[in-house]
Amino acid sequence: MRLLLRLLFALSMLALPGATVARTSVATLPISRMDLPWWRERFEAKQVELREKHPRLIFLGDSITQNWERRGPPDWADDAPVWQRFYGDRDAVNLGFIGDTTASLIWRIRNGELDGISPKVVVVLIGANNLGRLHWSAEDTVAGIDTITSEVHRRLPRTKVVLLGVLPSDRTAWATETTVAINHTLAARYAHDGFVTFLDVGRVFMRDGKLDRALYYDPKLTPPEPPLHPTAQGMALLAAAMEPTLAALLGDRNHLAPP
Image 1 (cartoon, rainbow, N blue to C red):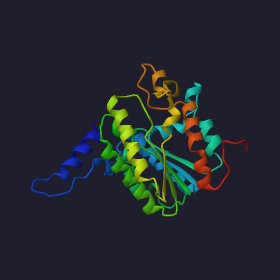
Image 2 (image 1 turned 60 degrees about the vertical axis):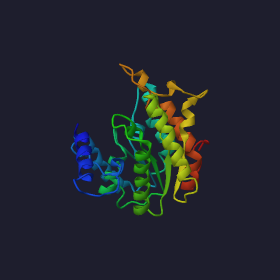
Image 3 (image 1 turned 120 degrees about the vertical axis):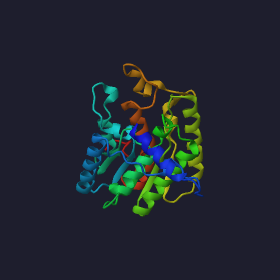
Image 4 (image 1 turned 180 degrees about the vertical axis):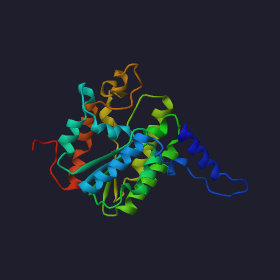
């Protein structure tokens, strides 16, 4: 409800009587979630971690990214060992926040999340929550993602970005169609970008042209929910899909091979 009120206020400010303004997508506006105690505590704790660690690699995202920190049992919730295998020796920091949209990630970036660091690579995975209850369009979500890559480039001009496509889910037909539209646009937009490498890794979650529901933990919950969040096994496939690109950009070994 608080997020909805902030969105309505932001939209009202864009449509003042008599004003002539270009349309601005709410997905590109910085929206704070500091009124949520857990979110504020995580944001502040991550600021300390960033200052102490001086990361070479950071991950910006929502719950799918934050889930790298989960530990099982059960085994499908044990993501941390996969993170340790691929990123444990890379001075990596997880900046995923459950429920974040493009707008909240923009707020974090503009409020210090990238200050005072100089990572070699930033991995961005965002947009899934734009397609939930908020129902933001493909056009608006792409605009939000473009704003994020621009903000990263302005603050970290020597850092490379690995932009992951929005992962496939099985929530609604509209969300599925919009995911495809977002990724199609991003693939074309960043095809020859020297700063951003776009990877549409959604194929690893598909089998015979359909979503492999076994790679998502939401249906395993009680009560079950539509597939959205990968299991630890799904996250391992995700890590493997982007590993060759990450290794090349970081200039270190490919972690798919034994150490």
